[in-house]
Length: 210
Image 1 (cartoon, rainbow, N blue to C red):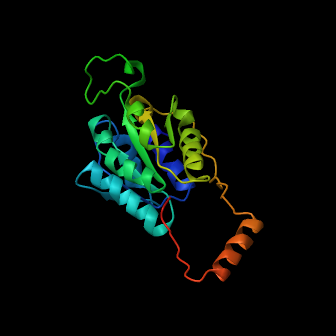
Image 2 (image 1 turned 45 degrees about the horizontal axis):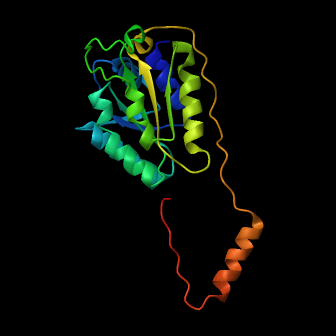
Image 3 (image 1 turned 90 degrees about the vertical axis):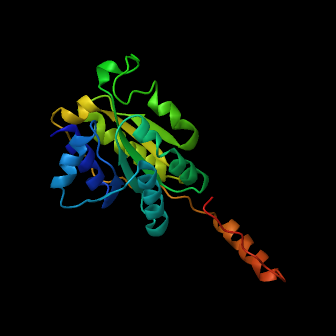
């Protein structure tokens, strides 16, 4: 399969059913695979920032990861406001973005959409960033990123895949869905909270995404 098919197959395996995004020159292999998918519904946005906020809203409303797809460089960076919001509000949003060909990474030769280190731009507003280094590593990189994003305190994450890997072909094995570990309170903590509420004269609850 192509790298693009590996991306879509991995999302399908993790029960992702809706993604938001915009096609571009580097990620067309993903969109070729999405066009053939009977599982995932793709919703086209007018702007990458909109795709990011749509994924955030989807995650908040349904409790499942919100996924957005962009092409390289400025298109990917257009999601920063949405990812920053998701980070602040503990919303599980995954950005899948393309990258320039592997051989050109770090060369700074002025390729289309080239930005020095794209992933560095996302580190302050995500829990995890990852890059696939081979077609066969795409499923593992994507699923490990999803797992890390969903375990414990939810935060957004980013995975990038160079365009030569998206367009290339290889024999790829896609693992089944992961089951993230959920945080659970200790019984003693729940009991203490119940006693405090029961004895309170004017109780109030302060709740939020964090």
